[in-house]
Length: 328
Image (cartoon, rainbow, N blue to C red; front, side, top):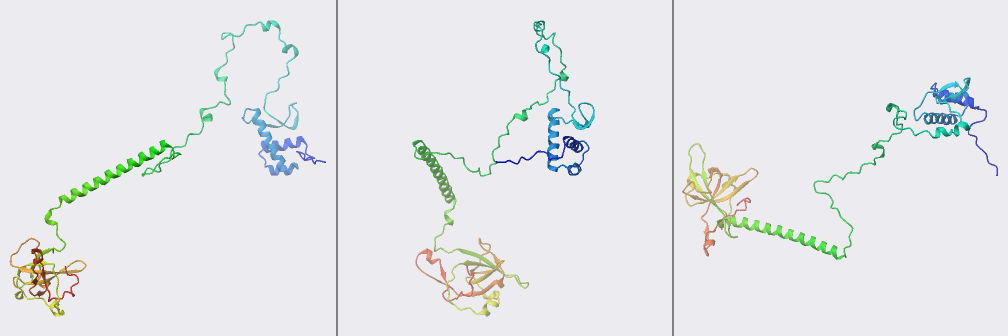
């Protein structure tokens, strides 16, 4: 089997021409493309030779690049070679130098007093290592935990093991005891809150709330103040006309002991209440209203018998309050 050997350097390019081309690139700062075209050298071949020349120069000078001189050979004659600024090689020692005389071997070893002193300035450390060079990378810090504490750290465990079962049961019992204590505190807090409430405020389901208000006519002609006791009972079937609602009542039509229907204007809607005209003023839960807000005079209600609580309830069986959906 015939192998086609690829030469490292193209045929027709001498070593001298290659050295001159490399020197022009390194010393004269010529471009690789133009130099390769001028000398007839492939660009990739010239790039490889330039790189090898740089590496060789740095290795010989201890990693410090030194300018090279083009056209100067070792013999001192002008040529196309590359001369590196390096010390000359010392000749090999002769046979006599390899085997020194016995007198030299019997000389005493140099002591601190007889040894040649080396200036400290001449001691150089070209490849000194620092702690940063040999120190490993720092360990990664923990991730920032959120305000909620983040995820709890877990561990692989066999739940069928007796020790693990005991730990799980103890954790469940502690959680249950904590929840029971929390529930007991909540019950005690609720009981304490209920005990603070006065017994007078507790009302039965059938008991009605009563309010008192006073009617006040703010007309410029005369001012008359009447006390109106509001009642929540609104059972009635008497039909009320529209004229009775639009026309305000006269002050002489009302007397003590009459029941009236009063309208209160709110921010978004109006409310209606059944009131009882009384003589005495300035009673708790009383308010003053305009006489124009009194919509109509109600008939005398009927009281149902029975217990004392039922006797306090009044009914307007002859009045129809369907026109007042906001009646309280």
